[in-house]
Amino acid sequence: MTIPKRVRIVEVGPRDGLQNESAIVSVEAKVALIEKLAAAGLRNIEAGSFVSARRVPQMAETKAVLARLRPPPHVHLSVLVPNMRGLEEAIACGVRGVAVFAAASESFSKRNIGCAIAESLSRYAPVVEAAIGAGLEVRGYISCALGCPYEGDVAPRAVATLACDLCALGCHEISLGDTIGVGAPLQARRLLEEVGRDIRMSQIAVHFHDSYGQALANIFASLEMGVATIDSSVAGLGGCPFAPGASGNVATEDVVYMLERSGIATGVDLAALIDAGVFICERLGRTTRSRAALALLEKRRKDGVG
Image 1 (cartoon, rainbow, N blue to C red):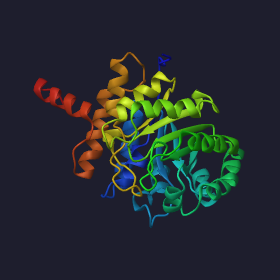
Image 2: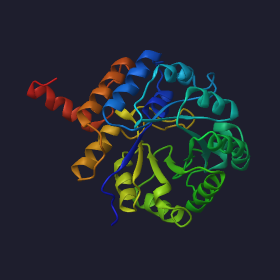
Image 3: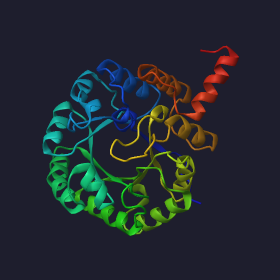
Image 4: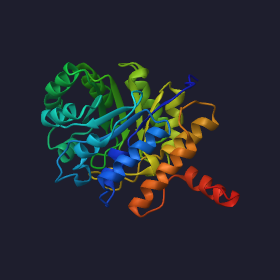
């Protein structure tokens, strides 16, 4: 096994998490959440996106959120951008990184972004080029990497080909997303074996949803393959508004607990992270989906702490 000694966590709650919550969170609450996540030690935070406010109203105030943030130099804020207009807004807001979003299945690509996979790559080419020219890092997301809600299983070779295409455009990192959470550990291993034939494991991140309770197992299988970057969402926020049946992302608290208990460093203060999850769940009017947070909050209560 080649399990890394340290893992980099990309916190996607403020974007991929909140975009699929029915409640609209205030600008002030989003700013406070991001500040709490940074204070907990998360250095890579996806702060929002510049997408259609009509389709994703939860992200309509991204510009206002970014305007109020003053992150320390070690905190890297990024946003999702679908086109050149979104990139221009991102650059104006001073973020250090952007992400583009492609799908491994034709059906999901057409339903989600309104075009075929090849056309999406053509659209992104000038965006990525301009972003790199502006000194930004560009991340490429691949959705439906382990299954599509419309087509079923997705061939690992199709994912690998798309990963190569995104790297050729200039993406420095590829995040493989199990958008509807149908994958299991051996499937995750086979996917990484295939993608790893074409790009370095150090360029790969994994992004698992927990629809069938497989996310942590899939993450550990990915660690065994040498992956050292994991996407997760505080309190298990979110899902995918365009994938029927998709539940929330894996909770960052659960990922941190598993890693730290396994002797793998994250640089994240779990207690402060749990507090950030409690904060945003109170604003959403619901309970955290993190099993680790629930257990540790109960322990706090019994111990009379907090």
